[in-house]
Structure formats: structure tokens, C-alpha cells
Image (cartoon, rainbow over all chains, first blue to last red; front, side, top):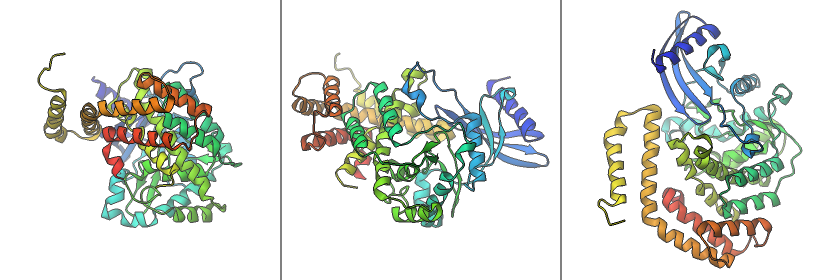
Length: 337
Length: 118
């Protein structure tokens, strides 16, 4: 049996075991093969009907040396990732239904099977396609409502989430940057700025951590599912609002909220749903620091093959994106947009 | 090295054109995506060959002025980074900000020129 057939046979056994017979897996296609996880789509027969599914497997993190700052970055994987999505769905957040949490007996490593949620994740199409005009009209407000629901999730049920507030983040990302040992004056400036402008937040809420186009399955009219909960944590809720406005996540769109909507619409909807008022300057901190964080992540990605010994085209390319957020940060600093 | 033919930039451009015209259309999903990313990387290397030497020389001379030192690009960047962290240089120093903006923009001209048009 070839590798591919063996993989399909294991997956079929897992589907039968967790979801139901008779299996009969077809259309198994690898969609993405990232460094931290890989995603496949497939269809299987469950009873008399054929259903589309998504398989997501977490890859083990590269072995890190003792005291490596990277090891302290939040990472929600495998079973925890599935628990996160189940809890989100229960809290009224649109999330893909988790159908199976894989275990040792499945022999596929940590991961899960979800129902396939039809929709679009590619930012370029969502930003430009005529069919998404109704989605775009309500996008900023819907994001505000969804984020309010995420931030209201009960952290006590998610004990694996790490505390990661503003001060903790600035400190840890600085150590991650230091560990890269690749001095960048613009990043240094960013950390000093962040240190001097640290927002005072008392609340530690459940954060998605990477709420932006690419991680939102969009229908023509509404956001259908929020995916990729891998860096969820407990922190300043306004972080998620700022991250959504980071220029990188506008994907070339003109408007601040995901390239699509107005900040006022995002804030108003969030305030209505969460019952708290939003200080735009506080969100702005997260937008600016978001650019610095993304620059550090690019740096990390550009070096990752040194750590893992696995080279990937995608990762090396991300390394070369470091100056994009630095340029945006310097513009923000100069009061330009 | 003697001036061998063909020039590196021509070789890269030829590989890029071939992959784009003959290979990419037959691929899908993650293979399509990775080859697409690889094509962008080849274009980046082409731009680096063309623009890199001048950009590096200008960055080095600005760094030397800001730090008052001589050394490799890496050493000078290390010095400036340390000065920023230690608070030895004013964050609002226009010369510093000008240097950072120019350096970032020059890198973008190589890595992703479209970003500057935004």
C-alpha cells in the first residue's frame, strides 16, 4: 500500500469509528500544508448520504531548546483546538461543527474532522467579487457582534488558554525577536513605542487572536464560520479589534476593517453587543503593535527552517514580508494612513 | 568569477517564464499555490540582483552617519538597534525616522514593490 492509500485507509477507519459507517472516502484533497498544521477536504458516506468534510491535522511543534521564547507563544492544537471551536459554537459564534476529535487509536496524530462549511476564505475574492457586496455592506458590524460573543466566552471552561495581555505580549514578542538575533532598528523602535504606549486593561477575555479575512469562511451575505483558533488566548479584548484593522489584513482594500468596513461600524456594533465602550486610541495601539508583531512573525518564519530543518517555499516567502508591516507602522507613527 | 553567460537575472527570468507558462496551469490546490509563491520568490531575487547593491551601499552610509561608526551592514544595524533600545537615540529624531523609512522602502522595492503603491 502506498503512503497515500495508507493515509486514506486510516482516515476512513477514523470516520467510521467516530462518525459512522460505511465511510467510502472519495475526493481526498490536500488544501494547505502549513508548518503547524495541514488541511484536507474529502467526502465520506455516512449512512445513506454522502457528506463533505474537512480534516485538520496539527503538526508537532519544532523541538525547541530550554528557555526558548517561542515555546511560550500561545498555541492551541489538537484536542484543545477542537474544544475551542465547540465552545465557540455553543457561545453563538459561527464555527465549523466539529465531528470527530482524533485520538491515538486513529494513528493520524492530533487533529479533528469538521463538517465542510461552504464559502469563501480568499480575501481578494471577498474584497472584489460582486457576489459578496451584501456581505461587505454588513461586514464590520458583523465582526463587532461576533467578537463580542467570543470575548464573552467562559474562560473557566477553557483551562488551556494562556494569559497573554498587553504587557505580557510586548515582553514575550521582544524575547522572540531577540532569540532571532537579527537586529532590526525599525522593530526596536516599535518595541520602544509599544512599551511607552502600553494600554491599561484590566479585563482578560477569551481572544481569537487571529480574527481576519483568511480565517473567516464567508457566504455572499454573512460570515459563515470563524476558523483557525490556534493562537487563541486570554487577553485584552480590544486586541482582536485592532488586529482586524492592521493594514496587512486589509489585503489591499481601502477601508480599515479588514479592507472592507469602517471603524465606526465595527466599534458601534461591538459596543452594542458587548455593552462596553471602545476607546479608539486603545484599539489603535493594537493596530500599531499588530504590525510589529507581524514583522516579528515574518522574521521568525524566515528563519524557521534553521530550527526545524524543514524548508518550505511559503515560509521563506513570508520572511520577505517583514518590511510591509514596518512600513505601515512607520506611516502610522507619522500620522499618515 | 569570469563573466559567464547567461547572466543570473536572465536565467531566473527564463525559469520563471517557463514555470508560469508550462507548469503552473497543470497544477491545483497546494501545488499550484506553492509554485505561485515560488514564482514570486524568483522575481524577488531578480529585483535583488538589480537593486540590492545600491540599496545596501546607501543604507550603510546612512547607518555610519547615525552611529558614527564603520563596519558591515550587520554590525551597524546591531549598533543602531542597541542605541534605540538603550534610549541613546531620540525616537523622534528626524534623521532616524528618515533612515528607517528609506531602508524599509528600499527593501519593499525588492520584496514587494506593490506595497508602496498602497
